Length: 121
Image (cartoon, rainbow, N blue to C red; front, side, top):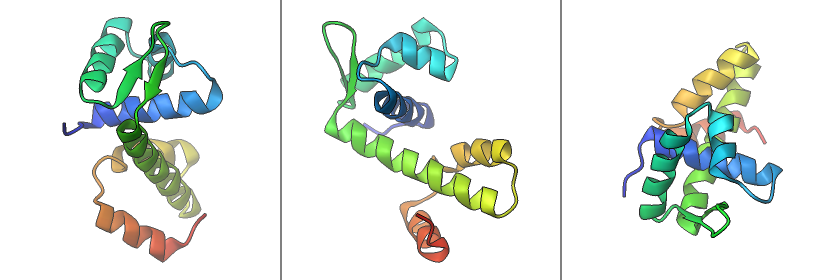
């Protein structure tokens, strides 16, 4: 299953929330992203069917290995691109918003080249 940008955003959100709390629920995802419960339920269902998340009996959402791989890739891109833009003089808010858009469209090749060029950790 090929993920669209919205699916990647959901996975990234679940990753971020799971770093903050041990039990992530659909309501937490909706609040974090500003989406309605029906929208989140539909997206989580698609991600579950695609093998990216599991949902436990108590409603806890967990990333599968495949889901974690995608989420970590997107999150790394977001963090790295934000840092580069800020260091180039872009305001933090704009850098964060722009990095969020860029993280979904940049190729692996280009992102690897950027990392080699800027050497941020």
